[in-house]
Amino acid sequence: MDALEKFRYWESKATYDLETARAMQKTGRYNYVVFMAQQAIEKIVKGLYVLFLEREPARTHNIWLVFNDFLENEGVIMTADDVAKATKYKPFFSDLLFYYISERYPDYKQQLSSSVTETKAEEVLTETEEVYVWLLSLSRYKN
Image (cartoon, rainbow, N blue to C red; front, side):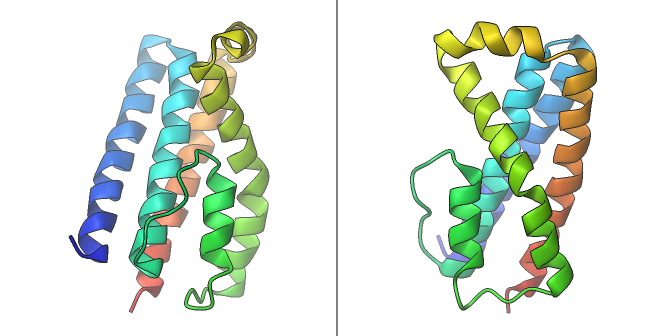
């Protein structure tokens, strides 16, 4: 597969995960809303990484680590507005990492269960959708 095909693969998986997060919101499974939100953003970021850098990203679930490596590459040129958004969303990427870790590791799962309310899940889902659209728009910078 070339870089564009790999990007499309990651994009399709990310879209599926975002749709799953929406479905989990409707059924009241709020832990899975935030977990699938994390998965969606992680996958679209990894897709962008492959698209632009034409190599595989680090094997990590730390979205900011992968995204920052992407941003610091001299071949990636974005508008000042997009760079500002990247800075704005950095704390959100950290929040998403917590949801990934909490869902995957039993010691943290109970703590997560008590903190993810319907309102919190809706907030995370709304921000995920906003960030997802923005991240997807970055593909326009690829020549």
